[in-house]
Length: 354
Ligand SMILES: Cc1ncc(COP(=O)(O)O)c(C=O)c1O
Image 1 (cartoon, rainbow, N blue to C red):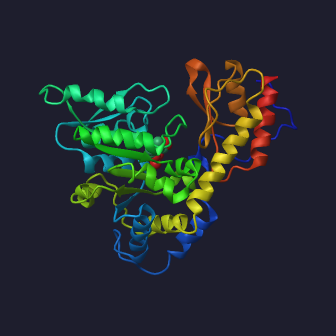
Image 2: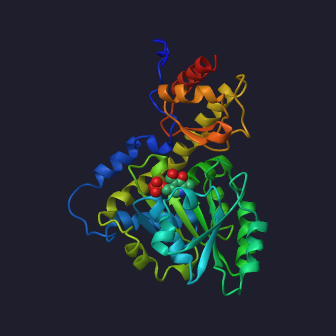
Image 3: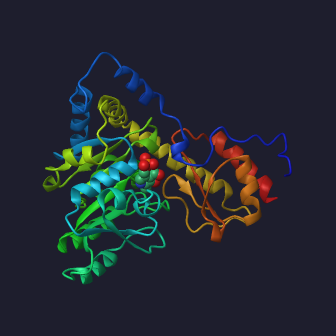
């Protein structure tokens, strides 16, 4: 192994994942502030009540919010609220529920995921319409829920109109729509109209249930399932416990959301992460040997690199492979990535390319 030159300082932040970042100081302060005295468990506390009210305000509707520990659990719970017996979930072959949850929805819910190919990780209304052929066939799982991810696992984003069209077709066929919003803040920041963007791509588009991420956006950990369709509320609290996503010390999850949703912190952090990805892309896109399918829409870039530099570069500063057959990797930015981190990383990329 060739030693790294001494003057090539790796960045303080890795480009592995927004999950790799620590928690935002305001989130930590909120957790510490919530850490006084006793509060009743399982959400019967003022922090959780405030959190539920903040989500209703954010969505501009009397949504029902259930806080959870993590994103996989939020997805499992969200799907559980929407699925009927014998029903399956339409999603893309890139979707986190299909490829990165170790089969949790299949195991916990006993559901079949109908994962279809999508080069950009986005479903189309046509994908949804094509499911109609299975209705009424006794031997086929009955497509019941469409799951879209916003922003997607490939860093692409749906427009609110695209989500609206999917919802229209799905609802027309009697199906419901789940939105995996582990990175919804990044999608909203990219769309650029704050709360209006959030509403337009969720409740306004007709989405029935949203997994709303916090962990990747500067939390210690915590996600929310936001139920927009009142028909799905009845069994949701029981389902949450059944899928092991009922935090007893819920005040600490709630306190994080309360800090994030106050004064627009959740969009500030996501917008910063998006901007750092754009800065990274702009800094490397013209380097010989690097190729991109598209500029970043949110906080991840997916370059194709000369294969022989991937491992040495990763050894120097960690990141994940994405599609090794294409020598494609993922570099992800976070709320705490700085321009200096990007500059240092780019210096390393230049070194290994040379
Ligand atoms: C799109 C998407 N959904 C859900 C999750 C699940 O999050 P967790 O790791 O908290 O289970 C992730 C995490 O990477 C994700 O990228």
